[in-house]
View: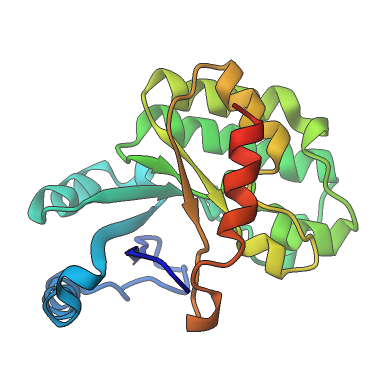
Length: 218
């Protein structure tokens, strides 16, 4: 697909009820990454990342993992609000306002308290939320989203533009272009692009599209 650099960031999830709990094997992962780096040599730069699930809830475990290996980057992601997983229909048995606002409030708490480099998929909750409610408009939650973006900007965190929701019924990036403008207005300096590829055919998906959106947002 023409990429000269790729980063891998498997899920490190510590909530026992999470589908990925106890999945990540850091030492074996690093051993395999070194094999890939040796195989591709100078033709492809292979970066080492990790996606930290709910890092504000497990500061000691996260600190231990981050200090154990020479990571290139870490993603902070939120999939759980309290004891509820946002990828299950049960979470959305409430009003849209309540479902989305509770998520963003918890996301701001994570952004304020946790150690990570990049805030992953800002409004990933819309993936299933759109299917449950039939709509999602980030402008309806501008105040809450701006607060998250302000916190990230103040702490020097980068914002990921994630293209995976384009492959779902919501058909949006995470976040959409308005939030990129808000991030710039709140003092944000760094963005990253991610296709969130769980399948080979999704690698690099729509990265040209989001590059253009980022430039338009300044």
